[in-house]
Image: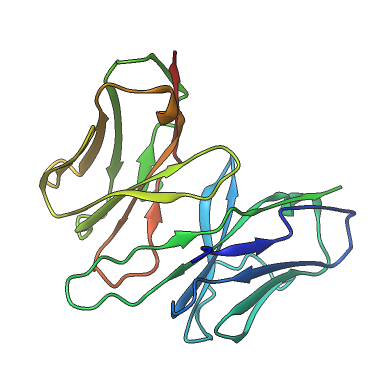
Length: 117
Length: 112
């Protein structure tokens, strides 16, 4: 398996523009997570889905952020309008519901480095 | 106060040294403890996974959990330049908790 695939790897945009980040989870995984990582705040969970349904979006910072998962193999995180303080690395991760005492392991993509000027 | 505290470092050690990393936490209900390794410009990857108190060893890596002190550690023996990375601790109350509590990460450099 190719792992979790994110695109683009780098995005530079101007304040006020719409930004769309994309993620393809590992095939067969039923959980998908969006994280944001900054030096100041570390790794923060923004939202996660189970079977394409958003379960917990309490980490989404503002209404400017939205996430969708139209099918099991694709998710987007959109920021509209973008602001300089949104500059960060955004990670997507996926996981398979553990059976019994199996581990809950999240597999991360390589991230999208977003710079909002 | 953050739920999980981790000294961001950076930590620089010579090759072959023992690297000692740790996290403290405030939620006594945490039972599952993880260490993730993150190389530069990459996503985190799971390194160690432990349940409750005690030690777990995997090759050069040893994870320790002291629930009475709310303190976890990761030791890297015979460190190599390839161990240079950021190490993040993470924890959860239940095995099926998908909302992990992460530490800030400690950046380690192993000098050849």
